[in-house]
Amino acid sequence: MVGMDLTLCAAAEGLRKKAFSSVELTQSVLAAIREKDGALNAYLSVDGEGALKQAAAADAARAAGRDGDLLGIPVAVKDLINVAGQPCTCASKILTGYVAPYDATVSARLREAGAVFAGRTNMDEFAMGSSTEGSAFKVTRNPHDLTRVPGGSSGGSAAAVAGGEAIAALGTDTGGSIRQPAAFCGCVGLKPSYGRVSRYGVTAYASSLDQVGPMTRTVEDAAVLLQALAGGDPHDGTTLDVPVPDYRAALRGGIKGMRIGLPREYYIDGTDPDVMACVRRTVDACAAAGAEIVEVSLPHTEYAIAVYYIVATAEASANLARFDGVRYGHRTEKPESVFDLYARSRAEGFGTEVKRRIILGTYVLSSGYYDAYYGCAQKVRTLIRNDFTEAFKRCDVMFTPVAPTAAYRIGEACNDPLKMYLGDVFTVPANLAGICGLSVPCGRTADGLPVGLQILGPAFGECAVLRAGQAVEGEVRT
Amino acid sequence: MSQKIDVAYVAELARLSLTPEENNTFQQQLETIVRYVEKIGELNLDGVEPTMHGQPVVNVFREDAVVPSVGRECFLANAPERNGDEIRLPKIVEDA
Image (tube, rainbow over all chains, first blue to last red; front, side):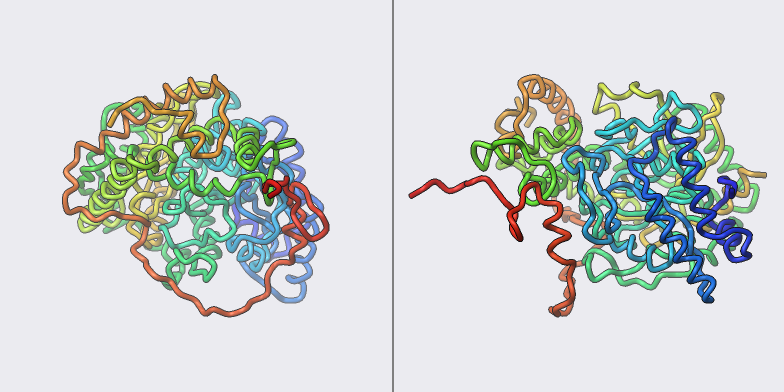
């Protein structure tokens, strides 16, 4: 058996040196899932047979002389990214039994690189939520404290990586859904810039905000995974055909001489003091290591949540119109009319949070309200973008908390949707502005819960955030 | 703005049937959320251009070429009901 505390890079090294085969590595991952997932509930489905076949193929390719950072590496995939032949339920009853007919571009790229698809991770239904309690199937638990949430919506991916059930995973981030669960579970999560990674084959939630990204044990692992994911895609017209730099090489830059911006509006009362103390300590350590600390301002931050919940729900209401019981997914019994077919199939298939957001999104787009809500929100979005453009003239990256608190208890935030929405305050601005953000562990609370530092970079500034993240990882470890 | 939301009407637009309980709960929750998001109305937005996407890209074209596609069986396999190579649906047009 191979130890499951391996980083992706260490696993790749082990495969290269023939310390173990991909089949052995994959068997170890499958054994870890069998042993631990009864408690964690990180996975919705596991494809052991398929994974072992892919692993054997990777071993054969390696024996024939092929090499690669992901060749033979098992990965876990959030259950809204299509992997041909595997289930893709989006943690929704409406897609129970759905089997992906084709690979998402990110899946095709990982497959091409020789990765092994071990299983599908739990999430808030259709990625709508911040705790993974919104899954229609199971409640994932935080590996650091089983009474607490793993964060969300990519909570299954975060729990699997942090809990030793996966070496690396894919998540998606529309308003913080990679970064916040990474922070809650104590792993690394990167939301790439809008347009950096293809969303083809990824179930759309809010199309102007969604991005796919890596969730890993280390910053270096995130760089390696992003290398395989990034790049233009003819199937996704929102990707930019900007050259993909060598992300791993960027890690070597060091923190010395980097200008770290502290946005005043993110250092406010209301954030848990333990969280703030961890962030401050990290900032001080980076200053001591030669970084320049600059105070910056993002004056429209207080409007970000309002803009997000207008834009995201409006786009969701349109995107989820495709679930109508006609071509795939749940269909109601004996519909009396077309309207009845749609309305009851959707009512039976969707969970509460999804319904709430569809109703809100439909309302803000409805006749007479469009300009006041969606139209205005898009203009405020411009102001939020401009804030970042201005601030990044004075710094290379920004350091902020990922979330105002560490992981909360299961059930604690369920009954007040607005309260849960407000927990996304530090993460949604990056999605609205299209910039990139990394969540990297930076300490623990008095209760021993992980705290995440968010490192924001300008659009297509992944090299800078990874470089800073690598330095932070070093400072926190020492 | 800030008026009573007609949840039943919006649900009809969304093709979503709600139970009376859901209707009541959403009524209260959505009014709270809408009151909150209306804070964007405080801002002077004269002359501000809207942002529709994370990056300013427009008019992305590709070659209009025929490429191989996934077989129809893959898609039909996910149909709720099928009839040979077709998706079966309840009758929706009344007899003339």
